[in-house]
Length: 151
Image 1 (cartoon, rainbow, N blue to C red):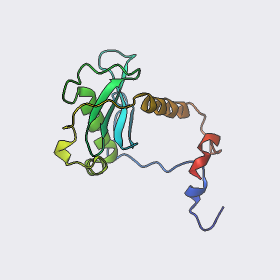
Image 2: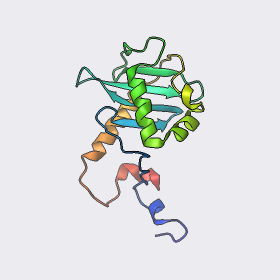
Image 3: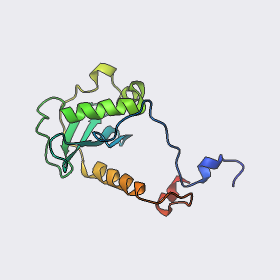
């Protein structure tokens, strides 16, 4: 190991930041602050086989919600749907309200005030599926080849 860098920087595993508060993954199994958006996957309340990809864009606070195959959410009619509310609630549990508001560059009370705008759902859903695949790997300390770029 290189004495100039901490041991965790020399492995193929990234540090996991503990959530601010525990959260249940059934309703919002995936939430992230990435690509200039708060984005994630939200389970449908009515169809177990359907999920929604919801997002809030930093700065403009534009909102988007659609199924994983880009069909628009029926509840997104000029204001935030229940999926966006669930995404924001879980993001606050995961990251804390200050970090979410800072990332979105907004006041706490204005986080769901933006207008609807199309956003790419496929990329977010693909990342969610990739994260699920890592859960199926057997526990190991051996580096994962596709994560070599962490080094």
